[in-house]
Length: 122
Image 1 (cartoon, helix red, strand yellow):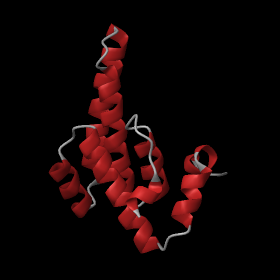
Image 2 (cartoon, rainbow, N blue to C red):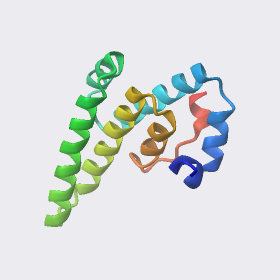
Image 3 (cartoon, rainbow, N blue to C red):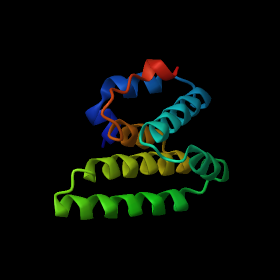
Image 4 (cartoon, helix red, strand yellow):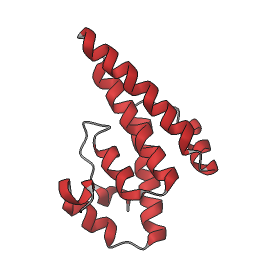
């Protein structure tokens, strides 16, 4: 079964697949840190968790943002989109910390309204 990235964004998947594993990791890290900045998250917190491989704390932060997103959505509060994007950014970081680079990129795509041009991170 193809990954979500392959199914939804084959051009991005192909660009990543053309890279060595080391370069793919570097590119994915740059994307995730860019997404963190774009969504207003604390990049040092994410960087620290990534250095430690602490995907559990990143998953917990993602869950907190998802809960806030759903609460705001239920109330019709327009801020819900901001929390959705933050949750996706934390999820992308958690995926990166677990070594699931394709899923980290996939989650990053949905963390911002800006187009993800993978060549910008090469």
